Amino acid sequence: MKTALITGVTGQDGSYLSEFLMGKGYDVHGIIRRSSVDFRERIAHLEGKPHFHLHYADLGDSMSIVKVVDKVRPDEIYNLAAQSHVQVSFDSPEFTADVDATGVLRVLEAVRACHLEKTCRIYQASTSELYGKVEEVPQNENTPFHPYSPYAVAKLYGFWIVKEYREAYDMFCCSGILFNHESERRGETFVTRKITLAAARISQGLQDCLYLGNLDSLRDWGYAKDYVECMWLILQNDKPEDFVIATGVQHSVREFTKLAFHHAGIELEFEGKGIDEKGICVKGPDGLIGKTLVAVSKDFYRPTDVVNLWGDPTKAKAKLGWNPARTSFEELVKIMVDHDMAKVASEGAAAKVRMNLAEYLEKGIVK
Ligand code: NAP
Ligand code: GDD
Image (cartoon, rainbow, N blue to C red; front, side, top):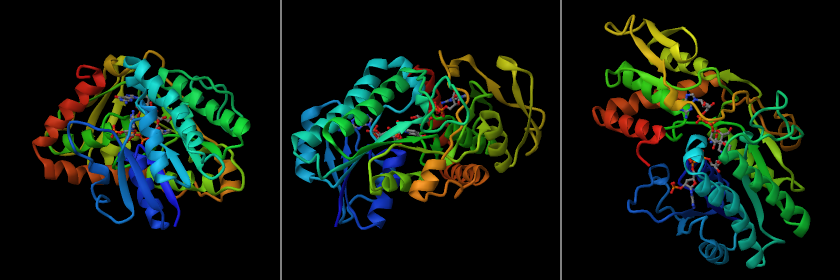
């Protein structure tokens, strides 16, 4: 039986990857941080299963990582832990650098300190944010990087240190350059989940209006459940290589919003430009028609924004046999809205409290 160690196991990808690896017969070990609340919603259904184990460690604390790596002695490490929110990286650039850049080095050094460099394969969660202020479209493994946020600059270090250790110490370590991937487990302050939750709340009378930032921003959105398979495939390859993982299809934040509201039973028409743009209800429940349900707020603009991400997954298709078209954009939006319609219906008024907290967090009012 193979043993895998996952950092970031409580996150969106960590939870899906745990399920995927357990399905493949792996013994799965996850790293969790100590916190004052013991609430791990995304992995609650896995806790207590015979091949799922949790260990306390923090990517900011080398010794804690060395101890877990030495105890577990994994065949594969998936380094998914990160401060993963781009907007937050402008508010907490130093913390982001410590976890997303130096944290990667700590994982690599832990493997060397435990003398596992010849046996343990390492996957690094890299990102399309490296392309940042994009220099060509679509982006592939040869496209120049131009990071455009503190998060992306930290992740660039992670990418290069993985490459360096591969070449310097002949380690099997690789980066998956993953484009945005979403799901019903996505954090509530990322734009897709913010939209699907708002569409559900507005249609159920629990929210008046959704405030967003740049509606023109373009993303290549895939389904997280499909993407975790690629992380595994990258480590099963004959040699260590980096791969772009994307759908090859691009949509704007505005398109995502229109489709999400459509699935919630509301048709929107957008009018105006920039900060004055509004999404008005033209069809839907009585009482909403003619109302502004989506508006733009400067609070959600970023000092520098990445606006044109579009991935080319040709290499992953050819070398890993990965099918990027498994879940379409339309299906993804529907999965998320259906989930959030049911969630909001069951939470009722509590959903409104969660909305206010998520909005304050994103605006940086609550840190
Ligand atoms: P996520 O839901 O935000 O999960 C992040 C995980 O990292 C959480 O488990 C979090 O633990 C953990 N973490 C944060 N700081 C830590 C620390 N100091 N020590 C240990 N653990 C820490 O992110 P995700 O969407 O699953 O993404 C997974 C990885 O892929 C991240 O590295 C992200 O940057 C990268 N990525 C994501 C996407 C995407 O579209 N989702 C695309 C490209 C790359 P807590 O639960 O304790 O906070
Ligand atoms: N979060 C957020 N909230 N984004 C908004 C909003 C809003 O109200 N309005 C517009 N946007 C725009 C952002 O400016 C950005 O251009 C785009 O929507 C996507 O934002 P996010 O969903 O926050 O994701 P991201 O692309 O910045 O980062 C995610 O994907 C990266 C891969 O490209 C994260 O998962 C990163 O960890 C990941 O590396």
